[in-house]
Length: 93
Image 1: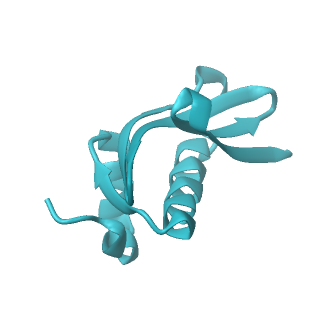
Image 2 (image 1 turned 120 degrees about the vertical axis):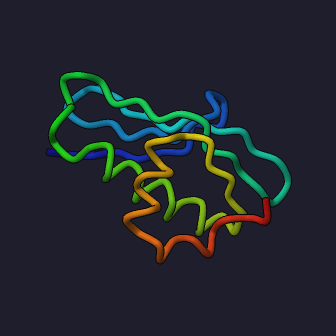
């Protein structure tokens, strides 16, 4: 399985392409910050851990960009509850 992750700034989303399908996390960026709005995994990729891999890769990308994070997406919120080591990315609410 070859995976391709990219920050599609024109589409305002992080994308993970697997097996010809694209899972994504939609976002809104502002100077120094990013809000993760919605995660979507195509049905054909369901049950394969794609959502968790996308969440992990997205958080790594946010960290690499040096941005503070706000999370509106329930899936990412759930992922971060299981991985509190990423809570340092969160901006002040």
